[in-house]
Amino acid sequence: MNQKRNNQNMQIWRGELALLTVILINSFGVDIVLCSGWGISPISSVPFAFSEVFPILTLGTWTYLFQGSLVLSLMILRKRFVPQYLFSFVVGFAFGKMIDFYEPIVNMLPFILSLRVLYFLVGCFLLTFGITLSNRCGLPIIPTDLFPRELSVITGIDYSRIKVTFDGISVLVTAILTIGFLGHLEGLGAGTIVMALSFGQIVGVMGAALDKKVRFVSFLSANTES
Image (cartoon, rainbow, N blue to C red; front, side, top):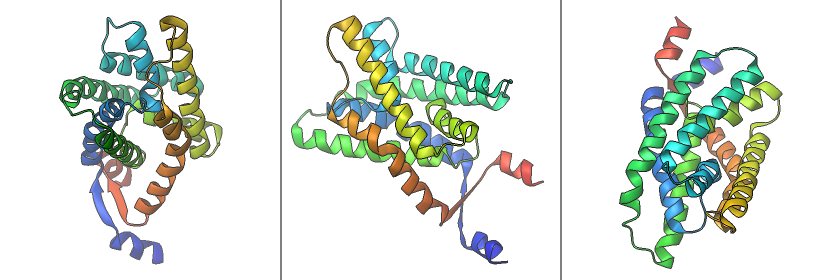
């Protein structure tokens, strides 16, 4: 009874709109964090490294290729074909395209210290809020958000621990690639380390707060309920 009353008092957000918001704000968040000069976000660090080492493809293209490998890895871990994961790749494809769309716009922003700090903070907020929405929209989501969430389900390990580990490994791979091929560290900075160590916890806090006030519904949840 109390649970039913609580559900009635909660705001209803459409999962489809939430997913569209994620694609738009997370792709912008990746670009503006990179523009800040404090370091690329951990979720995009590996595609960024490949785009620097093999610049024949754009950051957005390397992003959805990397995300495709994550989708394949999840299917291997599940030991079965999961159709929803393919839809997740389609979402990741749109995400990668938006990264390339925003890049020339963001590159026109002024590059001064005070604004660089603002860029970084705005980007971090957009990325953590976007990941929080992703985990709750009830629809196939961006593979870089899907991977730690599904791996947490598969292994039974807490999401925050999985997220921090995933981000840390991404940063390590980026360091190895850029130092190995370019001879120097590229794209990583203090901001990358901060994001890698904190995003899991921040998303957890944001998610707990959102769960108290908002319930997400989508065409998939409607089908499930019927």
